[in-house]
Length: 91
Image 1 (cartoon, one colour):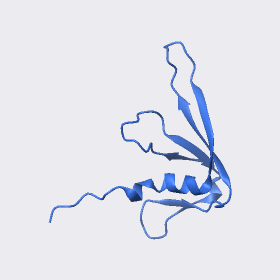
Image 2: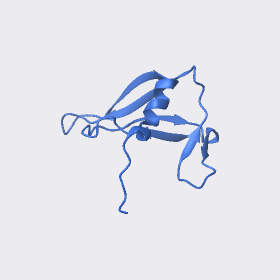
Image 3: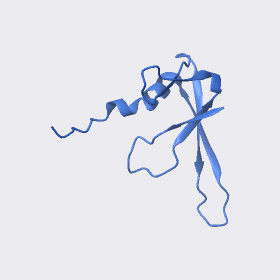
Image 4: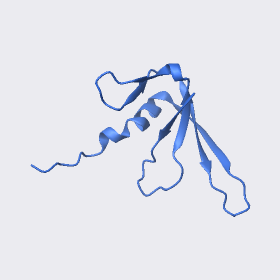
């Protein structure tokens, strides 16, 4: 299994990133030399995302938070980096 982590939409949000898991056979590397991965997931399905919740006290226990999103929403979450403006390089 491969864990896919999704960065928080708010850069100020320091909580753990949400994640989902896929079988290794479903995750493929990009053929164009970039360091990206891709997976074909059915558009009409749903996926359960989870994250670890830090205990509020020192002797507390870690917990898991879960939620289910439709795969179209999941795609927009995973590809949110495409919406960020690119830094302009020196010329």
